[in-house]
Image 1 (cartoon, rainbow, N blue to C red):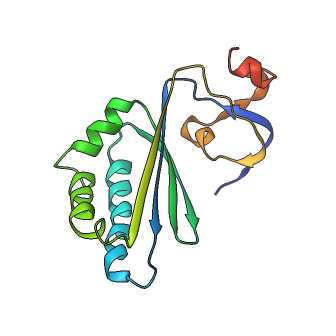
Image 2: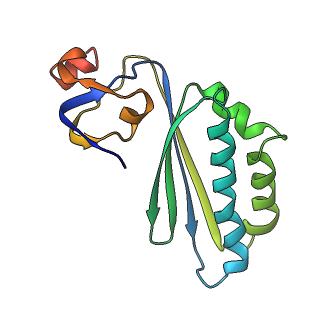
Length: 157
């Protein structure tokens, strides 16, 4: 995860932000042939995005769960997120079509996502003696006082 950044820090990123949560849940553990292709599809998508600096993906954090995985993704804009999701020449669209064609009907695997559009100046973060993670990993962190000593100040409330 990286070295601990000492003291109280806040994310340096202060622009518009799209937080995209996406996850997979294995509903029937024994039906490996049905859920394994779905589970394998995310890695190639993330590698493709990480190589394309213009994709709009700012950062990602993966959180494994007992029956699946949740990813927290940070995007520059909802337009760039949707452009990736709907591009037939990128890895997501064919994987999405294959999921609905093969795995969705059986119910062995579930997928979900939530999208939050956050206007510039409407994020508040604090990290105390933590390595870079989450939004703090996108453009690094600065001492809390540089963006406001309180949560209300950092939110420009």
